[in-house]
Image (cartoon, rainbow, N blue to C red; front, side):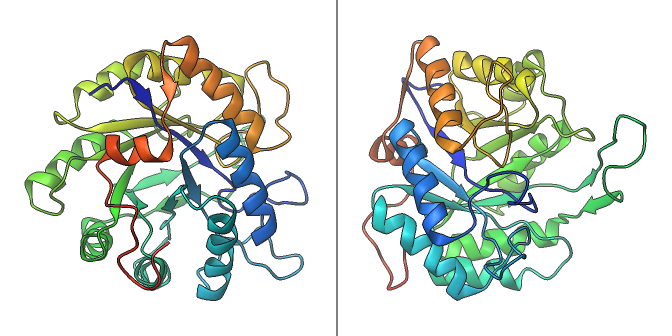
Length: 298
């Protein structure tokens, strides 16, 4: 499952983080600026969520086609060669918003949440940080996304919050829900999901089908960096960004996405590997040709 180059992804902004508290990018210009920081530091893929552009509403997601198009255009104007991995995460059965974006913009990759999770977090006093919520991803919902991705030649990136979800991806493939080799993201560090433990990662990799590409999405503070290091040593791909963490390996708060990617690339190099260019990442991951095949392809 390993390769000589490591694909580095930057998750620019995430969901619901308040930009008045944490300096996450929201506007097309801010997204393009942070994208350039990440690219200059060694990222070849950008994982993109999209935020409401109305004043005071930047903490809320949007699937508005004009907003999404403006953000993607700003990024691609600055970095034409970058790979876009579009978020698709929604609660509930209505997937019309992300589906419309997938069909309109046809990114090379898109997230596909591969199973359901009680999404929980506690404060230090034992109270809920937010009301307990079910992030529901039934098989019918997953198949709906995969059908659209297949039709538009979009490579799914399966986000897995627990060990059983990692194993489910292999079942989806055997069932014919998708055909190509899997791309799995092990989401580790969510309090009600898999812990951010380096010793767990080899077990997860062992449960993947032969030929699977994988990366770690490590959620937390300074403790996540040992997990990133382990993933690089095993030959996996890596991801960081203000969606996943606000803290650098030394515990200091990150000012932007660029410094997070720079810290992660340093770990990749310490593991004896080099970050892949976008062209190398396309070859490693088996993405479609970068030549646009449709009017709205980004």
